[in-house]
Length: 432
Ligand SMILES: [Zn+2]
Image (cartoon, rainbow, N blue to C red; front, side, top):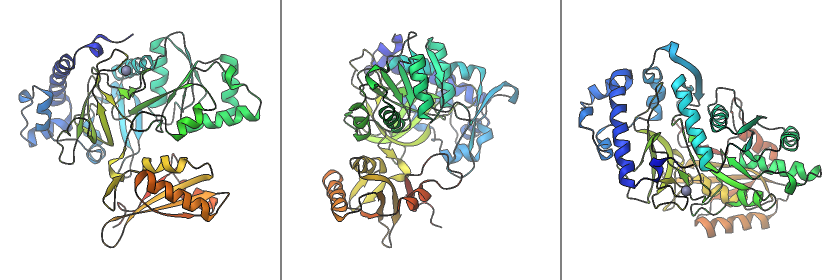
């Protein structure tokens, strides 16, 4: 079922959001210590903000500000907070997010709508393969969303392929919620234990954490590796704690759909001005309907492209393409601009590459250098030159590539206190 507003014209969607924006500005001006102060200091008259275009009169909010003034973003007294969430901050300490009862309802609504966008109905059963605790928001959102939608949900959590298969065979889930590379582990386990993938009953997977598609929406190497062995539909999603909102693909799989009642989207250039349509820029969001810690013009640090043509599914809402990369990890390499995910795609094309780490640094003349360390069971010059050729052909760059011992790469990938493997070491921002 598609919400009415998502079938409305682009102009009607815009007018709808402008009304919601006015409510948000009034709310921030009375409840948010941070924004109240900012409006005053910057002489912002919120009553002069009528259209979405007027947003450029208001300064953006950065991750650093969110971290530095974390408590000032809270708009409710402490006794109204139900759930505490943290995200890793850019300056070291984690950033805290506080959700009220209304925020949890909004999160459930958001996720139910997003599941429904990806074709999940009340008749489906979902198997949750991510953690629901550890102060993460995503797992909780999935549970609340499934409940709101009326779908069944099996909370297996992350890892343990044996337990995952036991649940799949026992409860017959129709959708999995998983990190795509973990689906490869499930396939491997099934093969080793003579489990027939065709009879699993799984129709699709709601994928998180890793990209599935190239910028033209074709499946990337990782996704092809999965679907060539297991014929299930893979749905990309994009979400973050700061947004309290998800962008899921519909059955047409042409980018993650925007839900206009939940969030305002801007795609900005380096000067905080909107990019021309179809250009890549930094995703900047304004949350709608959030009570605990709403954000105004928050810069996510993710570089994306918006797609605005009407979608074949019947929705007229904007769609976000796959994340091109993190803004901070943009590499200027001999006249070319590129981001690490493009290099992931190249390296994933080689089955011989067991693991790798991408190191970015700046040299004495201030330009960026790329150094890729790979681990392989077949360390030959032939492999190295094939990888280098592939880089030149696909990205027009020839980074330094060397083969290292697997243990050494693992040590780099899993530093103490890290919640997830490190794939990129960016030495440019750590230099003092
Ligand atoms: Zn669609």
